[in-house]
Length: 207
Ligand SMILES: Nc1nc2c(ncn2[C@@H]2O[C@H](COP(=O)(O)OP(=O)(O)O)[C@@H](O)[C@H]2O)c(=O)[nH]1
Ligand SMILES: [Mg+2]
Image (cartoon, rainbow, N blue to C red; front, side):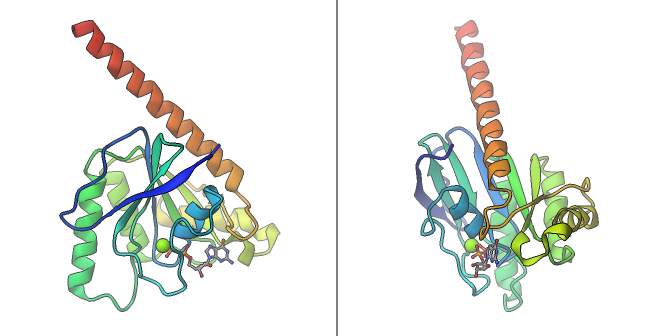
């Protein structure tokens, strides 16, 4: 259950991450795929993460603290056509240093349910595998497809990405998939809690 979600901080290139706390779950995907809308839907707050119909607006990593216990993280999107080479490079640097920071518990990678993954989606996915971050694939904007086509389209997008052929259809409009994602987050947070308790008791033994 998400009871409380607040914006904690933003960070850009060379910036500082907030103090680590519990699980950290990040949303990645191309600009306009629905990352901010997903966060707002999960947190029942339409104004929490800024959503926009102009792609490529968010260039910072935004941290939201949930239930005072863990972070949901909104990553800047990729694939905005107008981005210059310099902008693309700085985006890559920001994302790669975050992926390799060891902070991430889990990534939700978002794909538009209506379109095959782009080359940039595939590159993003290779990074996720390379850095070994556990992931869940989410096929967004499910409301834009007929109900009968959603599951197959979501799974096809995952397959074309080169992942196991399974993605959760999600819609911020109809809330389809919301309960499943909340449950997944609950599992990730509980798992992280267990690791914390284990490492705390490991310290006790050596003292
Ligand atoms: N129909 C529909 N539109 C959506 C959905 N999720 C996001 N959008 C729209 O897609 C646009 C981009 O959403 P946003 O969350 O800002 O994408 P982001 O760039 O990945 O953070 C906005 O105009 C949203 O209203 C959805 O599930 N269904
Ligand atoms: Mg956004």
